[in-house]
Amino acid sequence: MSQVPTSQAPTSPAPASNVPVTKIPSANCASNTLDNNTLDNVNIEPTTLAARLARPELLELTPYQSARRLGGRGDIWINANESPFNNVAVAELDLSKLNRYPECQPPALINAYSQYSGVVESKIVASRGADEAIELLIRAFCVPGIDSIATFGPTYGMYAISAQTFNVGVKALSLTAEYGLPADFATAARGAKLVFICNPNNPTGTVIDKARIEQAIQALPDAIVVVDEAYIEFCPEYSVADLLESYPNLVVLRTLSKAFALAGARCGFLLANEEIIEIIMRVIAPYPVPLPVSEVAVQALSAAGIARMKTQVKELNAQGERLAAALNLYCEQWGGAVLTPNGNYVLAEFDDVAKVAQLLIDNGIVARAYKDPRLAKAIRFSFSSQADTDRLVSLFESQKL
Image (tube, rainbow, N blue to C red; front, top):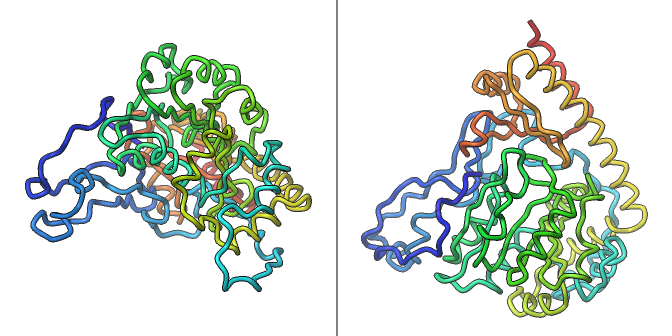
């Protein structure tokens, strides 16, 4: 999750034949606490056909290091903010039309999300997860080699990675010591076409007040302020989706991956005014939402599905409170701090982070660590089942003097 070290649109790199093969940290700089795996650059020789034809900047780009790419060994996986619940078993899918292409924007899905979110259908686009929505915004509004986006880190790495893959600059700005927007955020972000704010923020779990985000929207009238609400179901009072009617430069990103327990379905939503939606629809793929995904998502967004989601969120928050309490007790004794969680995960900073990492490895627990200097002592733990939480709480309690 390291910040991209540039605040300017990238300059033209040297020809591909002169590009050295180097290992460059990705924008998220995550490592697996189980075995410290990292995804290194593929060793592409500059003399190969692929390297000669590739865009030069891509030869220096390390892909986003997702939890699945990092891998690991263990029996408790709490490194990807996935839900421990599997709700697809209750879904009854109608696959009788699987031989036909799906609609670009399935009406039943858009209607279901409109009913759930309170946002009118004309302001909604369904995408393959929020990650595709990020990419669509960059493709639609940023000119490669000229324009830039702004991020406030440490934060989700895909904003910067997506920009870099399209040769779009990144203004990598810093959150305050308390992980809020800095006082000079408007000046610092000036010139960026897209300004990304993750709220709740991943990986810190911190939130920015709704009024403060509204100030950002007002202070940046010539930019699109993108508020990523991937975890908003865990703190719905912080949502700014109701501001869409008031601000034409606001975009809200949502997903069914977290609270709705559908990470494997890859279904997300982009919420914005109709003018932005119209531009997005010019660059979106013709069939972005597979029929089975749409079927599962519509059922998840039914009255029963939403009730189930809320029950599961309540359970996850309860387990998260138990885990955070155990981590706090550990940090009080051994040194460190635990950030107040607002998503389905908690970030803890340990004075003895190497010891904690080894403790997790020895006990088959896969959590998430970071190479960002601000997070060098931090480990993120996803909320999980009661059984998993019991093991984690017991493990940290066993370290008492």
